Image (cartoon, rainbow, N blue to C red; front, side, top):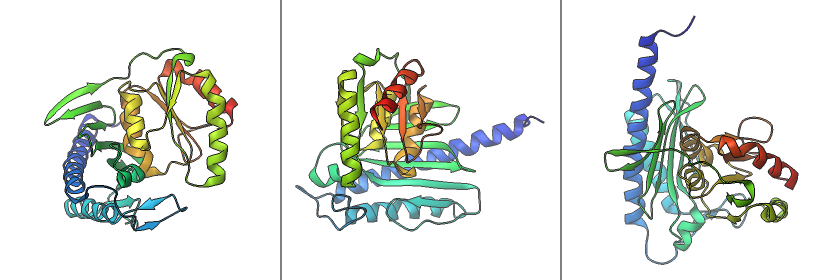
Length: 276
């Protein structure tokens, strides 16, 4: 039996409320980061998967702020963050958070690092918010409702533009922190480069996915993304009309590819042939 309209309306209201909480919390977190970041380079507090995979005390403090705001409003939800311990919930909703996506950019003062907050219901991402802390640009999406740029309380729809041909496509990518994996990825990118307009490496997956959504780049490919890298930006991209997929199924840690539906087949074939 198909869900009744009251059930669908209730789900829509819940999703809208989740997005509202993501936006308000993300804006507060972005302000927190701006005020806490000192001039010059930021001290590295620790490393994770390798010597180049860094974390700062501001990462940790920002994630704690986000956790407190979200679970303070919704104490029965779960929480999955890059820098802390996961919290199991009982509501069917969990939050997937990267407090600073693009930490290396943040450390060096490169103006491309973001707060990324997504809400999942029963395992499906239904609301997402990304804010470039340095520039103040904001993107949001709600499943089935579209994607938007946010300017204060104003929403402006984000719709992915028609794509160029593959040989004119500007492609965003990123690299693992593991040296051996990075070497393989570098070889794959080198193989792809002659087939496209050029490659861009901004250093923040959430911002890359939003860039494909609003047409600043034409396609995106990256290996090794975690849920917090993909969740919010991936929803923005898909709700803007892009196809977000993996190598042989859904986008996952093995591979994330995003492009316009008219380009995705040829682009994915090239990505596969290049050895990603």
